[in-house]
Image (cartoon, rainbow, N blue to C red; front, side, top):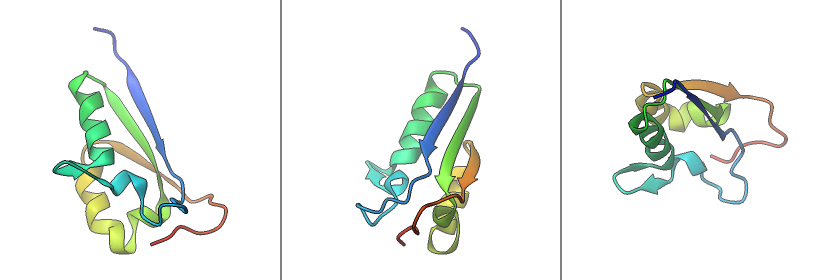
Length: 85
């Protein structure tokens, strides 16, 4: 099997949803955890997730720290408008 990486783009504001889409429940985990787990099951060497900085701090910090162990995260702090919390 060849080596490959994954880039998961989820750095938006979730303005219409008023809730971070990566943290939506998907069974017993979150949407972003399911995506990461799926890539890992295919043998992905490196998984990079771009996430809105607002969803890595404050109210969301505990969840972020929990999923941070399974991928490399890059925080998008270049938002137009502001993220809903």
